[in-house]
Amino acid sequence: MSLRALRILHAIACHGSFARAGDAIGLTQSAVSLQVKALESEFGVQLFDRSKRYPILTEAGKIVLAKAQEVISLYDGIGEALSDEHSLSGRLQIGAIQTALSGPIPEALVALNRAHPRVRVHVAAGMSAELAVRVVSGELDAAITTEPVRPYPTELTWTNLYEDRFWVIAPPGNEHRDVLDLLTRFPFIRFDRRAWAGRMIDRQLRVMQLSIREEMVLDSQEVIIKMVEKGLGVSIISLENEVIQRVNLTCIPFGNPQMIRQVVMLGKQDKLKSRPCSALIQSIIDIKTSDNMN
Image 1: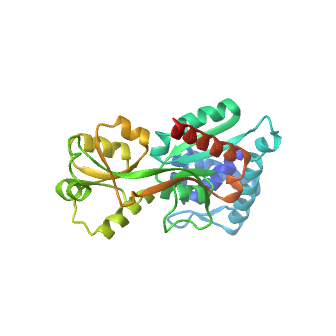
Image 2: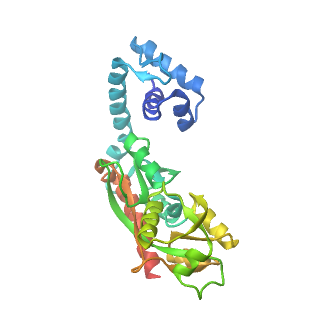
Image 3: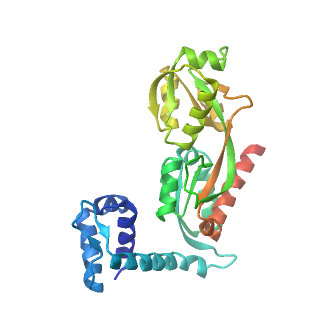
């Protein structure tokens, strides 16, 4: 029995099929199947009912999965258990929204590595809602997301990291126009409603009862910015002050008062309180505090 085989078993349970589990962990479907067969041979039981379209855990499989999760959790905690106050170690699987990855995260990771070189951080990108699902499944230890909006997994909690503000962005040269004029005059490029920030924007637009001409729905703020810079429409996105200063756009506050969002570290309580995760949280907060003072 190998730890890798146990992680594969956990991935199949999370993703619902051998193929999707293989995609998630970088293995072919046949390699995943071989690992499962090896486990079944070692324990002398059938772990999955393969007669259905998708594999379903047998009762024996459920028992092995529960024990596998315990073993994985114990192994992943060894680094932290061996660390002391001056030599923190361990592994973190972190998800992050794109704005955080292009904002404070790189600098925070550099600072964390300098202070605690034995802490290993693996980062995956995604939208807030999908990252939350991966945290619940155990695929990620925590995720840097927008503060949750309903519906969201209720077993998760969060720690505030920083906040940013929502802006109507338009091509250069439209500084003399107001928000209503921009949103009704130009084609609208919508930030995907599947993202929590997208839901916040959509809710406010419905309150304003505006008649907008939607042309595109995109899930990347960087792509939206490029589209607006090319004159293809206007949009509403959240931006940090340092980003506003370097983009060639008309930026007008959205909402009265201006709408804000909290960026948080989202996870299960025990993971957020782990020392490696706490160190990363503090590193991000320190970076943002320093930026705001400059």
